Amino acid sequence: MPGTELFGAEERKEIEDVLSTGIMFRFNHDAQRNNIWKAKDFEAEAKKITNAKYALAVSNGSAAIMAALAAAGIGAGDEVICPPFTYIATIEAILFLGGLPVFAEINETLCLSAEGIEKAITTKTKAVCLVHMCGGNANMDEIMALVNKHNLILVEDAGQAFSASYKGTYTGLFGKAGAYSFDFFKIATAGEGGIFVTNDEATYKLADSFCDHGHDHIGNNRGMENHPIIGFNYRISELHAAVGAAQTRKVPEIRRKNLLNKKFMQQKLAHLPGVGFAKLGDDNGDSGTFLNILMDEPEMAKRVVDELNKAGVGGFNYWFTNMYHFINQWNHIKELKTASKLAIHVIGAPQDYKNLELPKTQNVVGRLISFGIYCNWTEEKMTELADKISACVNKALQPA
Ligand SMILES: Cc1ncc(COP(=O)(O)O)c(C=O)c1O
Image (cartoon, rainbow, N blue to C red; front, side, top):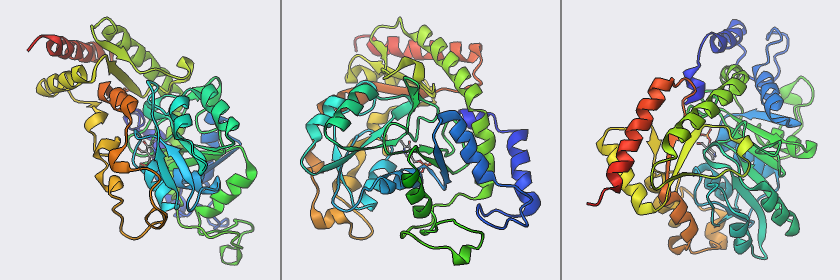
């Protein structure tokens, strides 16, 4: 968790700025706030890294993807192609907006493949919600060609991929809108926070209003503002934004160190039999937050995971059995269990979620073991970890 590793004087100073005025609300109060605008600072830092024309800081990454989908025009009855390997927030956001998730296959980039998307397209498909998983990037040339050919809306959930890019364009900025998470586990954290991005002014304005009860944010008297649309409260507080701004300034250095550490670990492990690594759409655009080991076979991966657990090696995710990142465990989604009725209950699900056939995804996620990269790892620490992983792989490969 690189961001949290570097929590220090910079974050404290930003928080103290806010406490010095007591203005924790991101809008208005111009006279009292001593020109302290942390949400704006956080947005400016995110724009500097991603080159987005517009950025909006919000309460969390889930709100950011909700805003991205809403501002892109996704609503009741719209089929949205999405991956079965993502954090559950992606699917929840589609459902709560009234959309209908259509699950498609991923490939070894850990993201939707163009082939998978194409197979899932129906006459009702409105959008693709692409998720850049585990710090990497999807095959954007192929995906953009397909999205353009079928005239689909692209929204990107880059919740795990802030600072990742593809051929010079940052994740989140290929389509209509994108989202990043700054929760506690990301490359940079605000504690809880998210950033919505777009290059389109009208889309930004919709998101800006959507995330604050429809306010147009024109003028300096909140009580007298107009409401072009109905919205909700997804605002970030100035305290969270203060931390987010300080952390985002550290991202270029975090990424640099992450990538060095990832390379070191890959070099240590690459010679092991049965061990490979997840692919990237663009090798130069990785954010370096995860070491994504792809074993040759799912059975082999399971044996390695057993050995890692037996040896007490922590710090990794075996997503195949993870309750919140992989469809196999999403029983509440399969059974559409909700607190209250959603559009999908009225319209009907576009797929039989309980009997989906996604063999490619099952294979890739079954083979995947991801270690979170720490930017402060020493060579000694990495060598120790690589030795432990090697021992576990070698044990797992021995005949029973
Ligand atoms: C891909 C993806 N999307 C969305 C989210 C939601 O972000 P948050 O936890 O900030 O709400 C996450 C968080 O892990 C994520 O990984």
